[in-house]
Length: 113
Image (cartoon, rainbow, N blue to C red; front, side):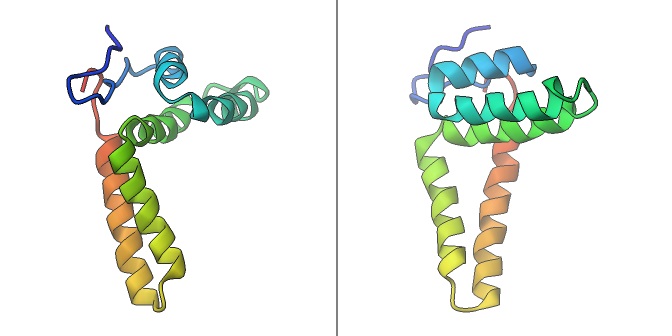
């Protein structure tokens, strides 16, 4: 599978496995790589346990899906920042709900999209 950027400039999602995801992060969003590697080491390698791999993949799949699209990433982080500065709980909840929706949608991306 290719990891070349699409005409939109947003790189495609990799195959859905840790090795391919790590390679895509290294190629397209290298700022995430230290956290990805540290999380892998702590949750999987040091634990000698493969049971957390699906949860690990779900989290990092979504993180990469957001980070590969700078505009979407800015939007989500802006919503989260505005929620932190909100003057009412209802406003904060509304902003966080919007951010969570965008995160969920990003996490639904399929390989090659």
